[in-house]
Image 1 (cartoon, rainbow, N blue to C red):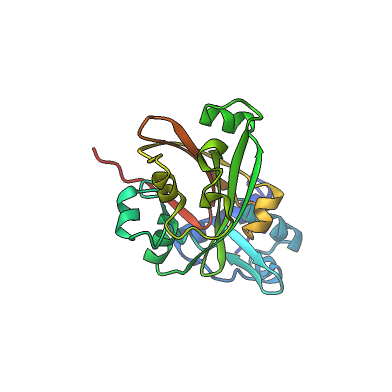
Image 2 (image 1 turned 120 degrees about the vertical axis):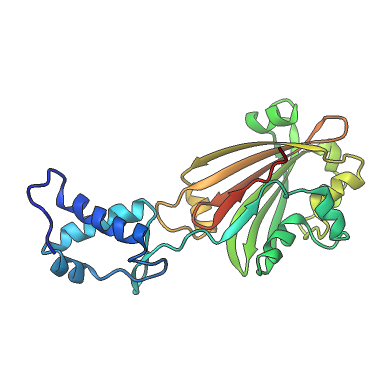
Length: 256
């Protein structure tokens, strides 16, 4: 099989299109190794540079990933389901009898073992966080940051920001795992989360996010910012979660 020199598209665009079609049709399956540069160059009667450019284009699209010393593989589709409408669910927390937060419940329901590594600090509120919490920019807030794992693989980052006046003396300020979940701690403090407002955007990760989450090149992330309101409609938490697009499907279930 050869590429068409009469086609106005560059040769590497043509080759990328052929390989993309094979991936989308299932001729190349998720996790399958793609033929080497030399094999593709021979098969399509083209140069290795053309092959290299085509493979790079598909990596940037997120269709391929490379493993050092092993070759290039078709990227496996998302494996984790993030049930946004159940995250923070009071019913789910009570069903767990204070033994498991909703992150742990979701991961375990998908047959994996959850783990979180948390750090806590006090810092001045950024303009964005202050606006969500109804505070003045620069006002001290508590920040609880988590790297969240499923089967020892980092699958998401979760940073929570609270008015210091609410959580300053609570276990939220301790970096140890909170088995019952921080929403339960807020309820115990008299600030019961009763509604949430979500803002969802997509972007490329920062260098630190890519490193911490062990992301392949050209992997975008979804940023979900959830503001929690208590029974008096006071903003009590801003939760920022970073979800790698190659590891998650974001799901909502909404009553009609």
